[in-house]
Each structure stands twice: as C-alpha cells, then as structure tokens.
Image 1 (tube, rainbow over the protein chains, first blue to last red):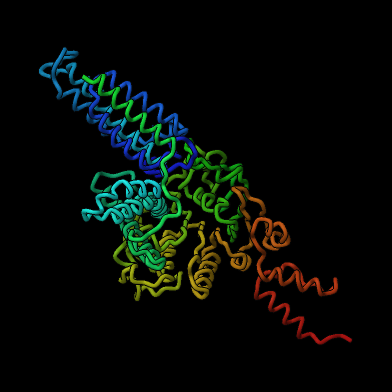
Image 2 (image 1 turned 90 degrees about the vertical axis):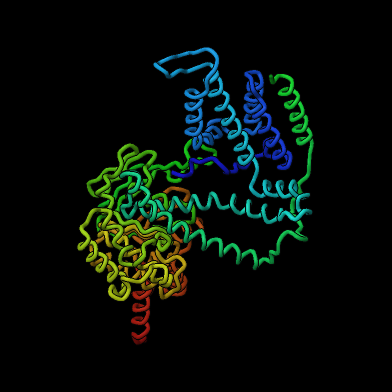
Length: 265
Length: 290
C-alpha cells in the first residue's frame, strides 16, 4: 500500500539523464526552479512544459509512473487553485453570484501557480528517479565543497542527507510490515473520527520509533567498525566526471535562460 | 479449517517499473488440522502466500477458500472472520508497543470487541500456552524482556485471538538453539491441544522434518513440490537443484543405505530424529545372527 509513492525512489537505468553527472543535474534544477518562478505568460510556461515533457521522454521512464509523484501534492495544488480563483481579483468578471466573483486574474493565477507547482515537483522527482542516492549526495557534497572552507560541515550534511534518503524506502517497508502485523491483530486504521484515528496510529508509531532508533544505533556501530571518521582524507571508488552529456545540459540551460528572458513580459 | 488455493496469482507493483509476479497460478489443498511446513528460498513467494490467508493481500487472480470463506480478487475476507486466522510475522517482537505485556497481548482480543475481563483471561491463557508465567510477566514492559521472551509475548498476542488457523513466518529466526526448540515445541503442543491448522514457514529442513505432516516447497512463486515429508525428501536431487537441502537425518539414511544390503535398508520414513535414533539403537542392540 505504501509502495505507490514515487518520491525519492531511484529507478536504475542507462538513459541520458541517468548517465549525466549529478552535479550538472543539481545545478540545472536550481536554474530551472528559478526560471519557473520567472515565467509569467503562456509562451514561457509552454516552453517550460515542453521542456519538462522532453526531459521525461529523455529519462525513458514511463510517464504514468512519473505522474504518480504528483499524487501526494495534488491536494495542495487543488487548494491553491481554489484559493486563487476566489481571492485574486482583476480583469474581466467571468461569473458572479452575489458578492462573490470569479475574475480573469484569479483564473490566470490559479492556472499558472498550479503549473508552477506541478513542474517543480515533476522535475525534482525526475532528479531522484534518475540519480542514485549515492550519486546525489556526492554531487551535493562536491558542489557545496567551497563552503567547507568557511566552516560549513559539508561532508556531515551530505552524509546526513544520504542516510535520510537511504532509509526512506527502508522505513516505508518497515511501516508497511508493522501495519500488516497490527492489522493481523485486528487493528483498524481506516474508520472512526479524527481522535480515534490518531489514537489508532500509536500501535504503528511506537514500533516504528523503536526500530528506527535500533537501526540508527546499528548503523553508527557498523560505520565505526569500518573505520569511519568523517570526510577528511576519504577517497572514492567511482569519481564523478563531466562528459559530453553535461556540456549538452549546459547548452540547454543557456538556451532556456535566453528563451525565458526573451519572451517573459 | 480446510484451506484451498485455486489458480492464485499475485502481482506486486502493478503498473510501475518494479512490477513483479510473486505468485504464479498456485493451487493447493491443506486439510483441516494439518501441520504444514512451507519451504523455499528467500524471494520464492512464501511471505506473499501467507499474507493472502487473512486478506492482507488480495489475489490478482484466482480464488482462495478458507473454511467457508471465499476470497477472490474482488471479494475480501469479512473483518470478523480475520481473527480465525492468526498470522505471526517474521520478528513479531517488532510489533510490540504497549506499556505492559498484558495490555499488548489483549490488543488483538479487544480489537475484535471482546469484553475486557474476557480479553484478560484470554491473555493469561495465551501467555501460559507459550510457557510464560502470567502473574510474573503481566505488568512488565515488553521492551525490557529478552529476545526470546519478546518473541513469545508477540506470539501470545496472536494466540489470544484464539485463531483456528495459525500461520507462522519463521518464528525461530535469530533465536539460539534452546529458544528455537522451546518455541517450536510450544507451537506444536498448541497445534495438537487446540486442534489448529498450522502453517510454518521455515528455512530449516530439520524444523520442517520434525513437525510437519505435510510439506509445500516453493520456488520462483510456484509450488514445485507438495506432499508428505518422506515423499518430498525422496527427491533429494530436485531439492538440491532448488538450492535446498534434505534434513541431515535423510542424508544419513541414504548414505547408510548405500553400505547396507538391500534387505537391511533403513526405511525412508525415519526422517524424524528421535525415531531414527530409536530405530538405529534397536537394530544395534539385536545380537547378530550367525
């Protein structure tokens, strides 16, 4: 029941996006997110949508699977749409009922904001779907490397992130198991009012916490047993290397910036 | 209760890149009161199979009959019937959560809306069935117990629902030999006394040989062998092909039989350790005829 969540789930593959360097993918996402917020008319949004579709095709993952990553946030999107339609005013009045109106600006904003959210989520899930957690954190560590000189514990942050990412699926699986074990003892998680439902979560939450702490302890022990002592002097088996793919990504980034800069109003 | 599987398949992660057929057209029949050993490598579909028994998973196709309840892809098991099938998962101590042992064992019975006094007497009974002293243990925190005790408390939590079918997924994993034996002997006793239908998933051929009167061998999501233990153990080569082995008693018998003349061979039905020892001792004590 929990396997349906696509966030953070790496799908191994050998597509263009899988093989590109995680650093260029990370930088590209930062740039893309900025562009998404700079876009402000239908031309620029169309360009961004087209680019996202192109990237999805490039990842060779099934479209329906990627769209699933929107599932946890569609409520949020719906909420913002409703809010904008009712609250943002201006332009032609499309519909009126007493003091309540739906106006052009509201609809426009609602559409744009939902596209924004959708694109951001699709693009970032494309990153985690095509990049293994190891590559992702190494990319991040290398990108943030310069900040290490001013005392930012870059390696520790990267390590924390990789552990968190690594344990998302494990904890999901664990939750799934505990839910099943408690359902087998007749626990019911789907009925009753809010208070009752919250109470029903206790039989899941406590075992989950206990096992998370146990895992953390075991992991710490295992790392120490293998001589882990922080990032200083650590060497890597597979070094990140930029390739022609990353040059192409850079070109795409420049073109996208120029296009959005030219057409935005 | 009698259990029948008719052409049951199960597909995990339908429509995702992780789609996997975990069960392929499984058909089997387990008579009421049987003690079934389910054997197979990791990933052979054992856990998937047993989760179908109380509706945690629905079959993708096919039909399961348990007693008078029929489960199909669209028809789920009625909630009230779920308590008839007690499912003990791997490492069941990971599901403990209450403040005291007694409360944790009562969790199941209370969920099935038994009055509190009755739930308590059930908890007492269940804890005593698994060999724990109710008065001594009832007010302790389950997290302070030893691994073996925690496991017994968790098993008692399932027994307290008084299931008619007991399903155990590797109940002895990670225990020491004495703990393994104590748990299995306890389960076997409960099986006989309560007249349960018991399904025991295990990696250990020895355990299966010792307790099972019916064996299911799974590989790649299919039932590749089923029958009485001695029938299954006869096919030693096939078991080895599946990276499984025969119990040591069986390989002992076959090695000895190679040395013995045809008329003096040990029968293959002696796969239980005690019976084999008794038989061999008896043979050895008979004075040789000249």
